[in-house]
Amino acid sequence: MTSRRPRTTTLACLLLLLIWAPAYAQAHPRPDSLFSGYSAVSPHWPHIRTMMTDFFGKWAPNERSWAAGHYDYVM
Figure 1: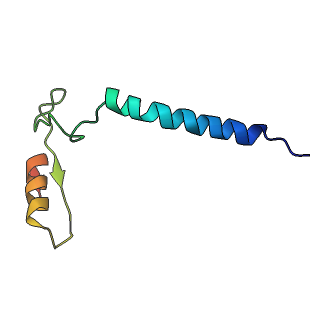
Figure 2 (figure 1 turned 120 degrees about the vertical axis):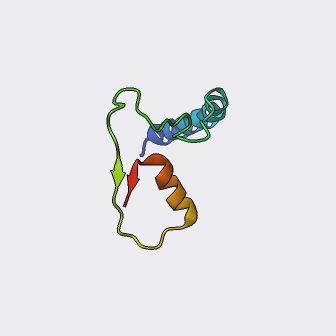
Figure 3 (figure 1 turned 90 degrees about the vertical axis):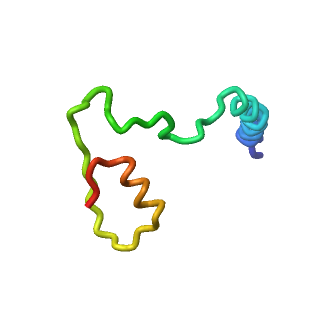
């Protein structure tokens, strides 16, 4: 005879997650971007300059502008 407890517990947890997840997502909206409020100068280390070296030769225009906006030097 097999026990039905693990299956019942799993189903109960899944049901609880399905009920709880939408309410949590509504109460905690996600930001539009991880980098919202980005500043080119660090408030902690204003003397640091960043450089990116990438040898991938086929950049799209939006990739170039993103790199130019996030690094002091791009090579």
